[in-house]
Image (cartoon, rainbow, N blue to C red; front, side, top):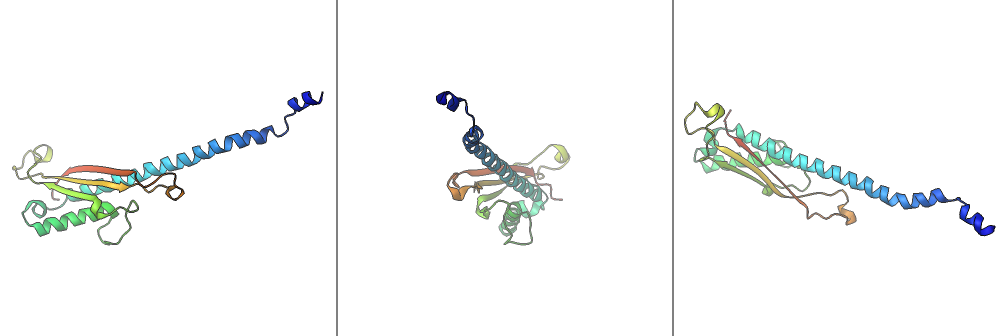
Length: 167
């Protein structure tokens, strides 16, 4: 009788179930947080690159394709700063993504790759150079990096192209 009552006794069953489920629930909770943070960080990187290419599209064509290397370098520096920080005024502003540096942003103006469609169809062949803004090798700042779960070897990248219209 005593052995049978010990098998039927369910005292503590809820505690055992809780002990078995808590690790799984914690993995799901923190895994979801990390996945959401990764998507948000990737979005900030893409947003920065797109902002940089939109800004570069409005630069004066003579500044980027006029042959003056000082003007070109200044334009590229402005685009890099805007891409990385979201502003032009403060060179010491914090980046959109932690540890994102100007060296990880590449700004290229293809003055020989003209656009001849859309608003450029009525213009001469010297209109519409293409700007390419690329962010590469930006380390993902994991929420749990200090715990050793994810390291900073995950690198993110993004690219955006735009036609320079010089507004």
